[in-house]
Image (cartoon, rainbow, N blue to C red; front, side, top):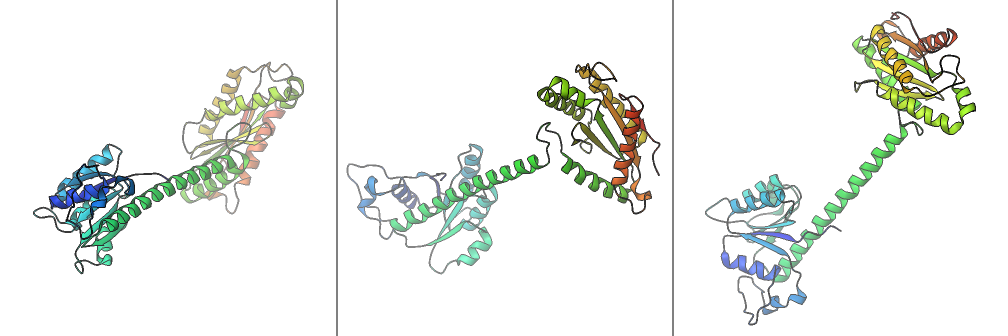
Length: 350
């Protein structure tokens, strides 16, 4: 468990401050003397072996305490507990001090020291909100030590829970990321593409915008795999995927692996002309990779065939995104039938 023994004590009575320090951070004395600030404070407070030692900082006014809390946060050495007397004339009282400290540090535990009947715990929680204890005078050394120890333990458990919660959140985010990424290429997978396209289709229908799709296929990839080996084929897929992902600049655009050697690019709000330009950029980018492919009829290196389709969903009646996929796939087929290493598109389908 995370340990924090930093304690802040605020009281306008200097004798009480000395007593708090003597109890919580005892120093060995050759001639221990009895302090009378607490009801049951005995000489055995000097027995360091029997008492826990805390790092105690004291101040006699609320304003000083607020400043000390601020400084501790800036130094990344926060207090776990603040012990605050309810009355600290002539400055701000204990409740106002506690409220200001709570605004600065949501994690600190606060112990308010008050006389019997002066303040209820419900009233205290309304004003200081949470992580607050009430200690009534007169106090014994055992009560002080126990209250502070309990508050420090609570602070440590809170931090441990925060760490575990953060770890769980990071694991959840990692699992979520893995669930939408293609295991081989690292780009988005088919599952994410289907969800994303459906969401963008619905959004484009509401906003009456255009939605474009580019479908791509690596030319003669089976021949590449058969002749260069599956390891080279996997490397080729990764390089093509990485290059394609670098051709889209907007956060709203995605490139995904559709399956096998097929890739897709979703372009929300982009009309047919814009989609053609991006498709041409993608085709050039793969040509620039110059991955040797001696078994292709399209070129002596790896190339792409592309099909582009654009639609305005609000004008398509009850049709869904599958119609856009079919249109892009049809144009991809035409590109392959026409010799590969080229792009085929229609005018924006109304």
